[in-house]
Length: 166
Image (cartoon, rainbow, N blue to C red; front, side, top):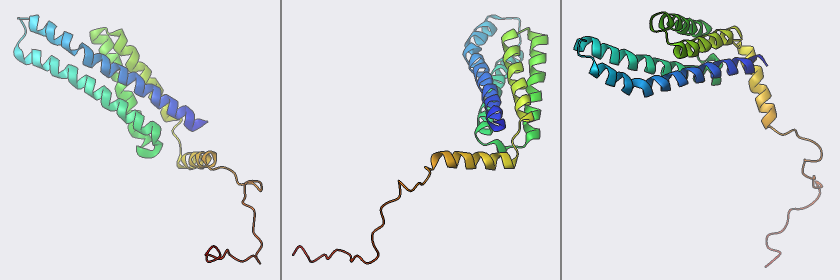
């Protein structure tokens, strides 16, 4: 149960960041159009905003992929790294809300951060992962019963003669 809740937390965080990355990739063209209308901005600042927009979208996409990975392979990373990633998204949510007042971004980042931090509290131990693998193997392997065993042939019977039909 613990590992299932952990996986749901990590998957929910991954989907929130994936939605945020898609949102930023889609709205990039609008940002480029608005920046091209601004004549009072230097080319350095204009290009910096463009690159930061794409960096943020790419960063969220990569974090989403990371959370998909640790949801499927819980011991692929250490718990400490995942906690730091969750805190990074929480700090980003606070800063984006404070400076840009973007509530959509703030909510998605906050949701992702909360679920990552809750998932890190449910972080599975090696014993939890081993027990989950045994349960999965037991669910896939059918139980052997006396009714499914093939009928035994008597030990005294002779094998069929291959030359009997000739």
